[in-house]
Length: 267
Image (cartoon, one colour):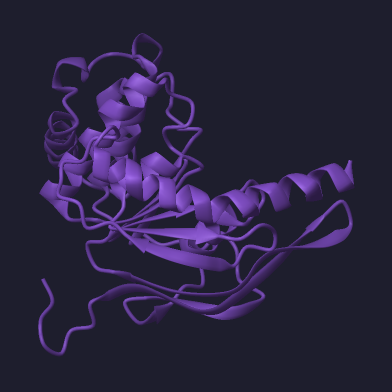
């Protein structure tokens, strides 16, 4: 909900361009990105491989500093990582020697939260992701989908303003991805977190996002924005969602072809 006098924009990106060095040469990752993400909004970013989706997420996280332009989070420039932003990677980074609950508690322990308090927080979020019966299981005893939910609970336990999700469901089978799409929508409905979700999967983006941003082939620029006004919870097979995904894919198809030609040229 927006209140008079309060800026509803959680993330504001202005004139953002960035390049990095690879094998001694400069590679332009993104060019002239202008984007606003509202408080409590899920924004999904799709684009061909190498278009700078993950670079954009890393810049927002504060892992890198942009060459040009600025990123503001609630009006404050992003200059480094901070507790207001948490990244959920495809490579989950769970500690195998800890239990599921121990992994969720880990960040809280680092922050100096008392044992009793961090246990209560961990148990609350483990229940939210429906893993309360697996709190004492070790990581190797969990399925891929369970591990992903532990990573999500760990991120939520830190109570960030923004969740930055970098293709977190890519390694999962289609059935588990569909389940986690519903799970993430349920979690969002309970927490109203601001989420930036990077994905290659167009239907995934349409299922989760309030908006879907299509990026061009390298260097990544914003080509088009799609608003998704369908009611939640959304299912990947919903006819309305399939139609929106088809429109997004039509916009993206040319960029994928351009990216593939570029790859072949560089081989």
